[in-house]
Length: 446
Image (cartoon, rainbow, N blue to C red; front, side, top):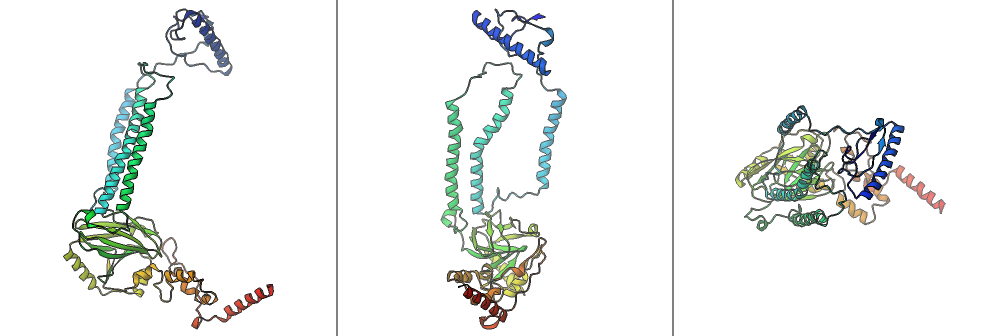
């Protein structure tokens, strides 16, 4: 048996007045005896006692030697080998990240724009990032500083405040800073959302310099290539977009297949192209150069090859490019477009010297094929109540995509042939019989 007097076991109980200390000592002794019995019963032993200043007038408490708790080993710094290994790892991580960045062949057109629209978008990105770093940097700093400052083996406990629960100043910071940041972000988002509206034409006064006359280009996304039609010049190209520099580019976009996105990162943001719909995008190239363009939305097995070059040139070079396209022997008629529409991958650049004046509208209306009803006519007919019984014979005119059905690898899928429609919008004999049978059944039911 040994005695647990305070001088022999320093830091067991906090200092108090003599009478209070005695009462607290007996209570602690009672708790210790309970812990001893419990630990003996379950085969475990307490690891350490609570620290505190020595007690000068505590009574003697007798406890068996074999049930005294063991003090934990002193906390030490990590071994030199561990620190050396961490140091080597810290040097390897930057090298690894640098190698990954060099192998990725990344393009930094978003941060190094060549057009006014892209520059405005870059500025908004930088402003938003800096504002958010006001919150992110302190959080990262505190995630490192707090564990180091309040680690378990520190010797200075003067700032230990176990009863701390609230700080008004801290509440002001934790709530005030995010509210201010969100408010500022809201203002910038509102301004730039209006300024960079893709449907809004570019203004020389807003750009801050003299600009030339706009150029009109119709864009069609196909499987898996891009078609660019120049209605005023009467030419077209595949996988090559030529534009004069310092002149607004007014784009009308649609798709003859699944939805995808048109993107030239150096000149501006991306926008969707969708079948049966028309979207708009307004860009400008501040200087001459060649810029990478691509489909930024997965659209099938040929998606990775669905890219093009954007050639920004002066007016004289652009006129020469138009003449080169006009020298082509190919013309983009409706029949030629249906051949171009067949899914292909990794297409070469191709030029067309002539373009059907109604081709883009028919592509958007899904009625390039002869005898098909365009989308606007279909909607007008639906608004007037539909085609009725006489429209059943014209069903094949509304089936616009079955012949373009493909599987996941781009191979055409065979579909049942559409039965030929009778002349003059009449009904086939079988159809008439079927309808008469239905009418008779309905009459009998009445």
